[in-house]
Image 1 (cartoon, rainbow, N blue to C red):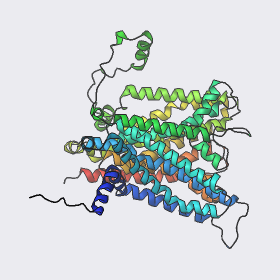
Image 2: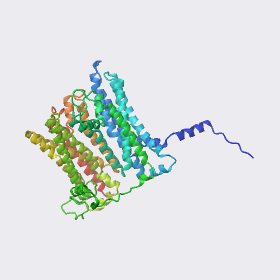
Image 3: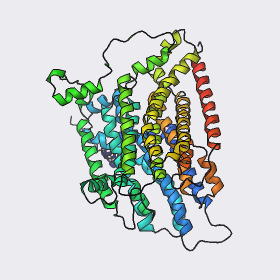
Image 4: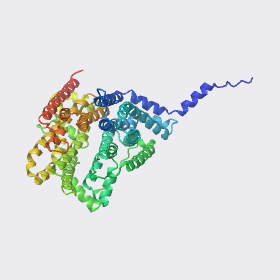
Length: 571
C-alpha cells in the first residue's frame, strides 16, 4: 500500500532554514564571553566611568556654556577614556579565543564538523565583535550627553570618533586572533597581544618626534609610522596637537590610518583563516644549521651573543641562594643569564640612542623633555614586563600541577615568597639599571640635574616594587595563568592610565588639588614631576607619592603572603 508523504509545516521549514543560516560558533562565542565575570566587570566599569565623567561637568543652576568649550573638554576626557578601554580591555578576549579551543581539544572537533574554516573564523570574529558593540553601546549615553551640551559636531566629532573605534576594534581583534593561532598557551597570547598593541599605539610615535621637519626618507618613513597609531587621529578629532607634531600646520593622519587599519585587518584575517586547518596542531622544529656552516658575520654575532653558554652544565645550587629563585630563573624562558644580558644590553643601547637622538635633533628638546621621554619609555617597559613575569608566580604553579610538588618540599611559605618575588625583582632591577647610561648623558649635558636624576631613579624603583606587588597579589588569586595574566594587565594598566585621564581633564573639569591627589597615587607621575616634564612641572607629588605607593605595596605583599600561606597549609 502506498504511503502518503507527510507535508512539512511552514514553521518547521522556517526553523530549519534559520538554524542552517545562523552561525553556532558566533552564538557560542558571544554567550561564552557574556557569562564571564570579566565581561560584566568591563561593561559595568566603563558605564560607571562614562556616567561620572559627564555628570562632573553637567551644567548646574540653569546656566549653559554657549561657547561649547565645556562640552569639548568633557568629550576629550570621555574620548580618551573610551579609547583606553577599547585598547586595553577588548583584545584580552580574542587573544585566548583560538588557543583555548586548541588546548581544550574543541578546535579539532570544530574542524571535523560540517562547518568550514571560514564559518568557524567568522563565527568567532562575530561573537567578539558583538561583545565590543555592547561596550560601545554602553558609552552612547555619555556621547549623547556631550552632544546635547553643544560644542561637539555630530558628524565630524562623534560619528568619526565611533568610526575610529570600530576600525580600531576590528584591527586589534584580528591581530589578537592571529597571535592566538600561533601561541601554545593562553597567557602567552595575552602577553604578546598587549606587547604588539603597545608597540603599534605608542612606540610608533617616537620616530616622528625625532625627525620633525625632515623631508628625507627618514622623515617620510617616520610620518607613515606615526599613522599606525590611533592617538594622532584621536587628538585631531579632539582639536588638539598630536604627539610627534610640531609647528602650526600638521598633516592629517586620518586617511592613512583608515587605509592601514583596513589592510592590516584584512591581512590578519586571511592569515588566520589560512591556519585554521589540521596543520595548526603541528609543532615542527627546524633542523638548524651548525656554526661552521654559517657566514663570518653570523659567527661573530654568535660569539658576542653567547658569551655565556646556555648549554653548559649547571652547577648545584649554593646554600646561600634561594632554590625557588634559582628554579624560576632556570625554568623561565627569559630568565636564563644569556637572555638577561641581552635584555640589559638592548635596554642600555636604546637608552643612550634615544637620549643622543633627542639631544642632537633639529628641534630644541631641552633636558626636561628628554627626561620625560626616558621616564615614559621606562614605565612602558615596566608595565609590559612586570605583569607577564609576576602574574603567574603562583597561578602558573597551580595551572601546571607544580604547586603540589612545592608543598611536598621542606621549603617554608616565607622562603617560597622570597624566591618568587626576588626572581622578578632582579630581572626588573637589571632592566632599570640598564637605562642609567641615558641619564648619565643627561647629567653630562646639564650637571645640576644630578639631584633630580636621583629622585627620578628612586621613583622608578618604587614603581617597579609597586607594580610587582600589585601583579603578584592579583595573580595569586587565580587558578589559571591566562586569567591571572589578563586581569593583572587590566588592573596594572588602569592604575597607570586613570591618573593620566584625570590629568588630561586638569582645570576642567578637575581642579588643581584633585589632579595633584590623583597623580600622587602613581610614583611614575611623581618621576615626571621631578624631572619637570611639560605639563607636570606645576604639581608637587613628593613625598605623598612615596607614602601611597609604599603603603599600598606593603598591603599587596601581605596579601600575596597570606595567599601563599593559605595554599601551603595541609588540606
